[in-house]
Length: 463
Image 1 (cartoon, helix red, strand yellow):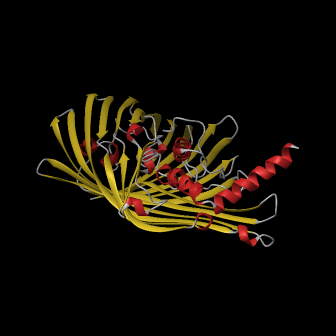
Image 2 (image 1 turned 30 degrees about the horizontal axis):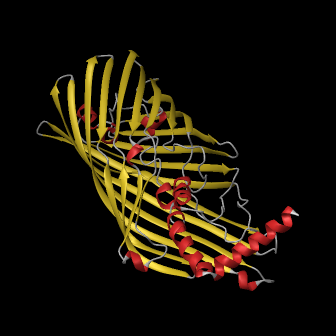
Image 3 (image 1 turned 135 degrees about the vertical axis):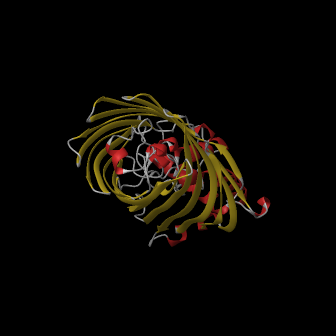
């Protein structure tokens, strides 16, 4: 009896949804939040990468207190005072991310109210089911995403000051997911895809000076350049009941720029001990672009240009470098990022009353500040060969376990181990590392996990 009346209630809801204008108005008002709420959630991790350079990465990213090669531009600009002459380096970073979400991508019911719609935003929901006979989730649980991120930089000394410049990409994430399932009631085909790209190369200019023989100060300017692209599609196709067919499409593309200050300090307490500190101010990126949404079941077809204000967190860290032996260096870092300012802030430039879905929004995502711990060592076998190893542990910014997997970066506990080698001959230096990074997020009903084997190569020449 219950399944029979349950099916009748679903059919009545579907009829009301498609035929009654008053219910449409209500649906517009609540899903205008959730239908677009995935946008910001592709950004977490911001600067939460392993860091710049195969040498520093081979030491687990514990480099703030050492910072004695050109990558000090990123780690601690005060460190470039340790460099002599001129130099230039290039880096190729290659990560292969194998991710699994036991819940795949969700396909939940339309939100019942605005509060639930905001919860959908924070969870990173991308799709909503129109009919009760649609599955609440898709089936594809694994994805593999390779990342290739090059970097370069250089330094020189002039009139008692040390200068550096670099171009690197701390965030270069993309997602390519698609799946096909069937409606369990009429075998209608449901095709869904989610493609996302977010790149943020940073152009840095740094200057540093020795204040005393043992104390150096440095500062830098980061120019943050963002490129955002999203494409979401869902098609419901029934050969037996074509009147139920619908299509949902969302497209967005935008670019933005921001400025961030960097400040560093390096204090050589003893010949065998140095302490470093770095602070990055963060900024609010202003991204401008175009958006389009179409939902045929609700009679929606809208487009608009938009402005998004995306907060980038302030970050800071402290590092210690110890040299208990002439050939051995041990490093420790503590780093923190303030993600508490993260919000979803969109302004569409067409009068709000004309839009049913592309509405101005400002939602606080309730993220938390994150802390990272890193330790590394470097052993010099001789004048040419060096061995390195490191370990790090990071926490995610999300406050809740109830987070979508593929459409966010939900790994609450993330740790990695790294091994690296260095070879130097004359004016040339070559560094390479391998890293195994693993993350997971346990949830009451679902589980999210990922595994990332990473290779990084660096070539440096001094003049």
